[in-house]
Amino acid sequence: MPVAAKHDYHLKKFTDASFIATATKWRKELSALKTEVLFNDYDRMLVWAGEHLTYENHGQSFFYGTFNKGETSADAIAEINYFKKGKNNAWLKVLDLHLSPQIKNDVDNGKVDYDLLAHIFVRTVAGTMVLTHIDHPSDVVKYYARSDNLLQFFQGLSHELNTRGKLKGVKVGIEGRWLVFRKP
Image 1 (cartoon, rainbow, N blue to C red):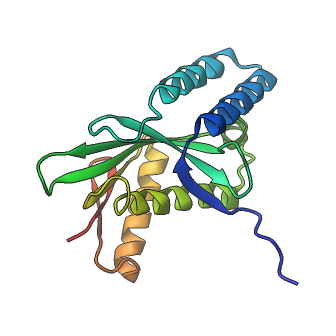
Image 2: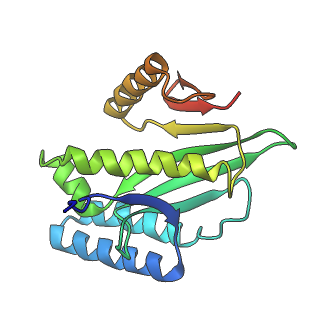
């Protein structure tokens, strides 16, 4: 008998209900962690995200959730900007991937579940690439490295993808602090 996957994440748009469920869960996690600074940072982000759940406008931030299969609240929130200049010049920029407070707390305290983090990150990247074909047509996707550790990870990922040639028809590179995927 096959074993059910522990992690089966997907990037998707928030509905009003799923965003409320996510914000409620995250605020409860923050209260349990008893960290006021973290609470204020997350609260500002959740308020900002709640104001940007319309997915039609160009040149603004959009927030997508990375949900584990069957869950009504997201374990991560991706902040994505879509820019379109002219008929054939558009790109997506992933400015930040906010992990839930409990997951972030576990990472900060050395209780890292690398399998969980890998699934969240990889499925967010894959989901963003799908957006370039459906909701936000573009030939360029950029992921911003907010930390030196993430930049090192991006550099290694770029090298691996280019060396192994796993993404046919897509060029992968580093531009400053950005991991960049380009379709020719």
